[in-house]
Image (cartoon, rainbow, N blue to C red; front, side):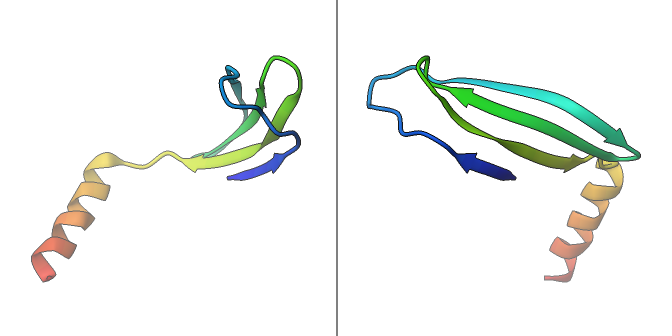
Length: 68
């Protein structure tokens, strides 16, 4: 996650976060993130995630557990 903190928010303010999927490249997903406190934009940045095969992932975890 790569975020820039651009403004402080006083206690009690409501925060609104917007996330948009901006790129799909194979199994890689990139999201744009912004947040506002109703007065200022307080952060912006990006986050990258990867789609995983849950069966393969869980099999690898089980092998690690069994080896411990």
